[in-house]
Structures are given as C-alpha cells and as structure tokens.
Length: 585
Image (cartoon, rainbow, N blue to C red):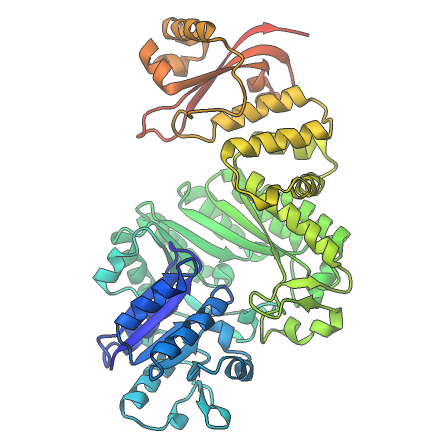
C-alpha cells in the first residue's frame, strides 16, 4: 500500500511536526510511508503533478487555517485524476465541526480527529485488511447517507510515541528550516478563542526523552527550534531543567518558547538573566488585551503589572528577544480600549509586537457565542472578524492600516532610533503615530505596491513633511543614521543626495587615515589605510551631535561627520564613529 503524508506549510522554511509523528508511529508496520511537504505559495498544479506521479493509494493531509482552502482545492483536483485514492484529513482545522466538512467537501473520505498517532495507524491497518471502518476509534468517515463519527481514541502515553526526529536523511533536510518541537501536550488555560482550550490538562514527555531528541536536532545542525508547548513555563522544575540543558548544549541553535510572563517564577527568571547566552532564546508572550473586563469575557486571568515587570527585566539583559502578541476585536474592546491596550504593551518596547485580529475558530467558545457580541466574520478560513457590537468595520480597517506600518517600521527594526524619537516626542502616543502614518499610507495608495528599503525612508519623510513635523532636520539626521545601520555591507545608494562634495570626501578619507583618533581610539585601533576606508566606509555631514543625544537625550546643533565603516564579513556589526567639527546656534 502506497501511503503519502502531506501538508501545505505557510512558508517554505516551515516544517510539519504532525506528519513526522504520524510516520514515526506507523512505520514499523508501514515502512514505506512518504512525507511530502509543500508550501501554500507553490502552484497547485505543480503539487498535484508531484503527488500524482507517486501513485498513492492513501493520502493524508494535515489541515490548519492557513492551508485549508488550498488543501480543499488540491484534493478536489486529486479526486478528478485519481478517483480511487483514499483522502484522509486531520489536524485542528477539521476536527471540531466534522458535519460541516463532510457536507462542504464531498471528496473527503475520512477525518481523523483528536490525537492522531494511534488512530492513524489503526486506520491504515484496517484499510490494508479491507475491513469496515466502524471499529477505528477517533475517525469520522463517509457513508452512503452522510457520514459516521466513531467514538474518540483514548490518549496514549506520550513516551510510547517514537521520536519524530530519528531519520538521519530527514534531519539533513531540516538544517535551514524552522523545526517544531513539543515537550508537552495540552494547555492549563481555557481562553475562549483558542482551540487549545478544548482539551483540558497538560501531559509531558519525559525530560530525558526531550533532552535526547533536542540533542539529536542540535547535533544535526538545525538552526531554529520552535517549541509548540502552549505555556512552556507552567511546570517550573521541568522548564528549568530544559532551559539549563539548552544553555549547556545549544551550539548556537536558536530556541523559541511560548511563555506566560505573569507566572514566571523569580528564580527561573534570575537564572535566565544570569546564564542565558545572548540570542539563543526567544520568548513569545500572548498579552492579547490589557482590558480586564475583556479578558474576563474570554476566560483570561492576567496580571499585566507582573507581566510587565518580567518583560522589562528580560529586556534589560539584552539577551532574549521578546515577541508580544495582541488581538484586536476581542469582546467589548472598542477602538479606544484597543488604543490603550496597544500603548500599554508598546511601552514595554518588545523586539516584535504582533498585532492580529480575532479569528472565529470552529469549535471554540467564542465561535459558539458569536451572536452574543454581534460578530460578523469571514465564512472561510481564516475566519477573521469584520466587526462586532463595539468595533465597527471602519475601526477594523483603520487598525489594519496601523498593522501595516507597524510591521514595516517597528517589527522590521529598520529605523529604531527614528521611530523611538517620533513616538516619544512628536506624537500623542505610539498608537497615534502608527495610526496616522497608516492612514496616510493607505490614502497615498502605498499599501498596494512594493517598497525597497530606500523607499520606506522616503515615505516616512513625506508623511512627516506633510504634517509639518517639528525638528524635522534632527529627525532626518536620525533617519540617515538608521539607514546606514540597515546594512552589513556598504550600501550602493542612499535615499538622499550627499551633502559632502567628492573632493571634500576624499580629503576627509585622507584625514581619517592619518588621524583616526579624531573619530575614536577604537577606530584608530583598526589601523586602516585610505584604500580600506574608501572601499568599506560611508560618510555624511549631520547637523546634530548624535552621540550626545544618544547619551543624554540632549539635542545639540553642531556640524558632525558621521562615518560608518562596514567591517569584513567575519565581523557582523558595522563600526560607526563621529567627528564633531563646529558647534552652531
């Protein structure tokens, strides 16, 4: 029997943990199972051709909100050219409204719901033996008059599931991809909008097994491992042991965890502050809202003060990047309340602030209660809300505009110094800056075209000029500095015309080669000649003493030579220096 396990990942760099679990659990009986991963960005005809040429008897697809619509189109095409192939769907997207899927998609033969490893193996054995499916627990299947749902499969001991990462050939394909990993299943919380709330309780893999699997991935050269545990730090001792193991064995692999910051224990936090290597850990923290009433309506108990303290302590170390999540459109959170939520969370200055919109996932409490709050939402995945009783569609549109420029100008880290100054000094709040800029961006039609780095700077400058922003000459100095810091190598062009004439530029290069101490002792230590400086450096004359501003916040108007030396590739960070020439009024 020719069996294929497949999915359409959101991006090429992603990989599927679910498929590898299913294969590992069944390959003792079915050693020829193939995993075929694709991306939703690939042409469906290309995927269809690849699958067709493999001549499968059974194809199982792992389904999520990001791939379900493309998966449906694909299986409809498969059934037209291979009508006898058995199509099996599984995954969270098809598990909680089974009648809907059988009614909507006539090409589905079987749906596996719940924990799939034992169910899928039992299903394959039944198909191979040509027996009736009524004895397979944890599935629903098509019958002449509709469909039949069998009783659920009991949860199995997690340590009885073989490791999904034992195949050396497969490991070799994962080195440059995001590898998903779990140390536990289940969630201790019951957030009304989340599918994880449907299954109560948390079960853990043995810590020794987790260590073995992690070490195998690390030693294979995997660069990024993302834990899918819903709340990694809920079990203090367990989390601490894994943190310690990874700190001792990371080999520069990066690990991302979903944590709940307001329950982070002080000793765990202090251990991370003291011992975590810079850049090895990343934390994803779901804040969602700082409106206590809204949180109560979706069964969230959150101590935002404690959360903030944890985030700020971690940020002070500059060791662990933090990704904070917000959800627009939660019950009873109107536009003004969301403005406050955004500003509350932006005040923590997370490395990334992810702004998403509520999705009415099938099977969740909020999906069942949609009419209670007047929700209107998309009929098809990703089921994103359009409006509710307190948040109009016009509000949603405006917040989406904000989200667009937030991604381009904050989460991209292209203009850290400039944006920090603008949100603190020139606008009423961070929310107001991103909202006003987002509105202007949409008004100009820029949301419908692509943008290079240089263009992003010009767009911001146009917006600020249109607003007649104060201190624009100072802001431009910050923008020039930020632009230079975008590059590891000397940029070929800039978004402005250089103020230093070519002859003067050459004179400055000669001066810097002869008197490097005018920049700094660190620059002098590089011992560069004129050729090195010319080849690898950029210079510009600024109107302000930026070193003084970065140090004290004081804006001193003075002609300042900004010099950026882009060091060879083995030294990642550019060297920048200043040479102040003459103070002016």
